[in-house]
Image 1 (cartoon, helix red, strand yellow):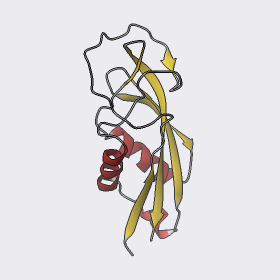
Image 2: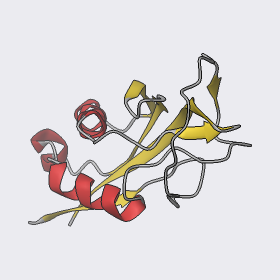
Image 3: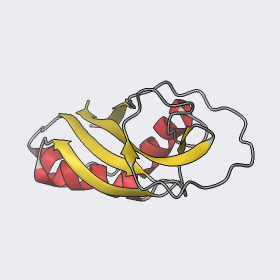
Length: 135
């Protein structure tokens, strides 16, 4: 039976990427949520590129596949001013092996486009929901 990955990627904001301009990095150490900021954090290339990345990176864990465990793993994390991700946590668990696979996928992602507020790059909280479906 062939496995298919369906991915619902949700950030607190839209996925549109704007052309980047040179900005000065902020010394502000505040972590912001995605409301009321100029540019939301995003995967480089947007939602479609992220879905493609996940589909080629994902390895459905054998135990969950054999036990027909399906559903969503929701991750919360910070997109830092340099585009790296940190503080990756499972916000909604499905099964331990699927949770760890979702974290592994996110850790392997390229640097993200950081959020911007008042012309400065900022650390910003984001979420991603990765769905595991077997057909």
